Length: 288
Image 1 (tube, helix red, strand yellow):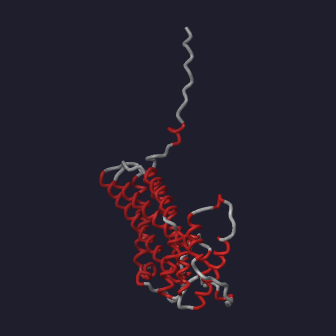
Image 2 (spheres, one colour):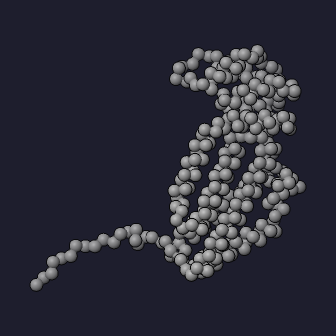
């Protein structure tokens, strides 16, 4: 008697393609030990190079621009390698005996800490760069990105010691929070305020760059009309004179916003005129 034909069985592809727990704990320990030995050695030997910026000093052979860029590039590649390595190890490493598992946790934590040390160093380098050349969108966003990465590594550190933490969920939450904060923090106002504070301390400012910001920054640009430096005052007045002319032109109702209205009302209270100035004084060189 013929048996009824059994329906074909299909294997779930996710069962075939999953690699979770496929790396032996000994391999993971070896990789982490080698990587951490390199980082610890590098940090100890190059400590003065990495953290000379703590004393707000600068190595003799570097300009501020070179010092910041080199630190940022070193940090970028190290971060990329470390972040990828941590995620791979957290996902692939097999569970072993309690002592081995604890050793892996310690080594992974050490890798996170070394990476965060480099992140702090890069953060300070960028701060030095901003103090020397001023604040811009790109530099402020770079700082914000560093803070976000610091938070992500903290989450990863907690995940190392608590397997119940879902990395993707907290990464997504941190990313959304950072996006909301950046959009509602009004970067234009912060950049203008910090550059004005820097001008009061150093006497250096790029007035032309401030004029490219949104009209939220106009009240800070108006402050420069009282600047002691005559060239700064004239450049600021020229920029504000141009803004005043533009804001007083008839505009479609769709372009209305409160920022423009406040700037228009503020500038209409000022008696502005266009000054003849040396074109070389219209902006400060922001890079070296």
